[in-house]
Image (tube, rainbow, N blue to C red; front, side, top):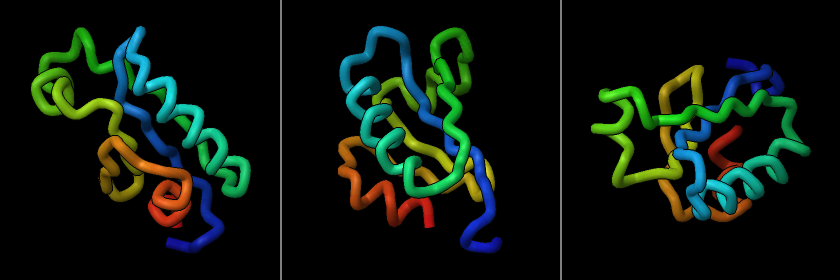
Length: 83
């Protein structure tokens, strides 16, 4: 993949999750330097996502590779994750 290619980055979350809001703010800041797409993915209501992520959210996942970054993360880690 080219470094400048646009990818979709998914933030696996649940509504009302305070940590998810913090994670989203960090990711949005990182995305100002990269031209990727952020997609919020609500895990509640999807049994597979709930089983896999309920104890881990928020989780940042690259749609292109499936790579995941678990919370807690800081801005620098998100920059590296997006490269």
